[in-house]
Length: 118
Image (cartoon, rainbow, N blue to C red; front, top):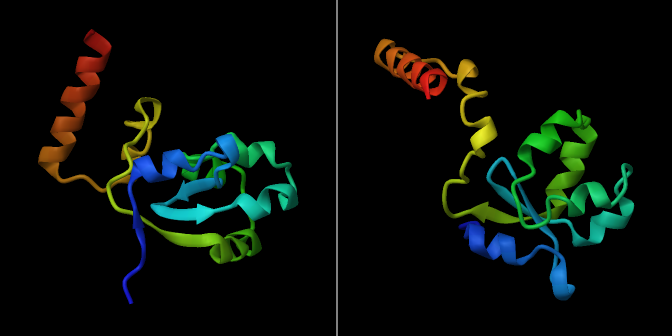
């Protein structure tokens, strides 16, 4: 069975405003967390801050337990149909974790040099 796919625009439209549902994206998966907001141990405002957006970084930085990750599965409604853009402030921070080929390493150096020269 194919999983339901959603565009970024569809997720953004479900941001809790005007009575809409609250959807978030974590690692490319779309979750409808509307019914969980009042149950969130850290408070609902931590979720609504990311309503209609990618919450991957915030979810990872919060240090959620494996139980929290398992509980999240029941709110899964589908996947994002398109690549989620990396915010500008995070664009280069994750690259140190990626294994780079020699040509990719030199490209990375060129980009870093460009950033410092501008």
